[in-house]
Length: 348
Image (cartoon, rainbow, N blue to C red; front, side):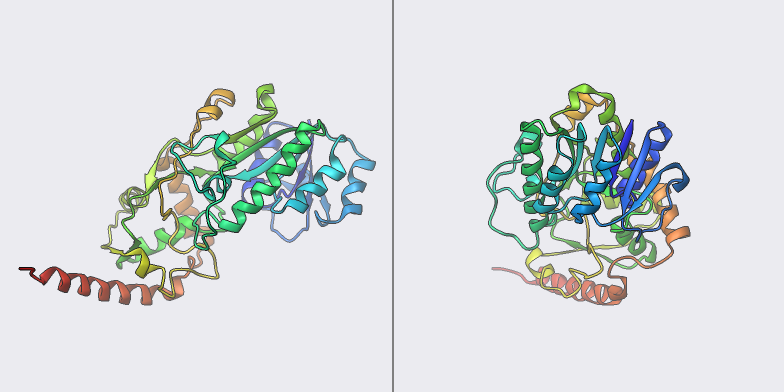
């Protein structure tokens, strides 16, 4: 197939391109040229440099070329999706849109397991610290609304994928590395709250395969799919598994959430601090993807070693907020002492 992809050099999209090349599709990538291409041979694709918000630039792509499928990997606002419909609607038969489980996690009503039809519950009150991204989820809902309307009007045959935390080598968010680096230094780990809320990750190569497999099944047209690991981890479960693989098990200090949220290092301008702490259980049904796309996920013990290897031997830099590591350790020790004193109090 002839494929046009908006994006293509990011974490998820590079893995998708790699698999599309393996399956011998003809690929044109729209990119600003600001990202290094590491995961695929760029000689195997046509690179077109430009801004996805430039109407004239996008219009020129379909004046001189025909495509079977459009992948939009980087639509984050309603206006961006509206421009895609305006330019490409009726000109490219198929649109595959990259969405997110955040469209569910901004809802005032969440029932597990979360299914694809649970995307339109009314919004919760705005929660700034929503770990799935409050404004992000709202904006992605608006993107979806535009895309589904285009499908209804037969401007595209639409498919979309909603994924949770995406992990693996080259992850720019460095979520796994936050915990890997701290486990390896052996100093106490701060755990926000109980660490017992369950959720899912997804290995980036599994997610990429699902994006490619949409092309193979007619029944995927007009459908959205949750793509997530079959394994379910709480933060505590995740750390148990990671500590076992790293052969190191530092002390864990649980800090009450109302206290944790006031700590200066509980957030970081660098990215996700203390990731996978979901504040609520969020389990996403993948039954539909297993049935329609024959989706299977890779076990944690198989993908995490190559991720660790990449961080330690290729990336080699610090994780998010690691400059504040000493402050974390000092606070953990102080919190432990306060808890110990409280336990010594007798009540008559």
